[in-house]
Image (cartoon, rainbow, N blue to C red; front, side, top):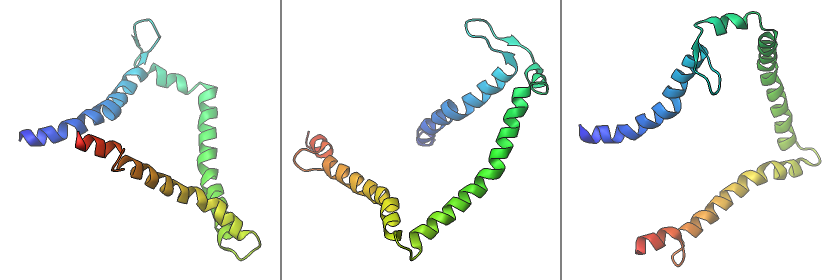
Length: 132
């Protein structure tokens, strides 16, 4: 039982620190008037009631809905155009393939070189630590 707790404790600590606590704190803040340097004042659902009359809130809702409804279609259209440019038999298609895939391939090369340096027999960090 102690081993199970030992394995779960780090994961639960990270979960509480980065997920559960921020959610609870956000709920707490939403029910209070939070002012820097002063005590928090409990206002209940007053903050939420104020949203119904706030024009900036409704503008934000409108902008979010417009973005959420149009962005997926624009992304799909651009993705299709890019796919056609990469795989069509048109002049310059090879150039588009090189420009698009070079960063992807280069990242694997760079990661491979870094790992090679880390595990280098003569001066690599890991082998130096293993020999100590």
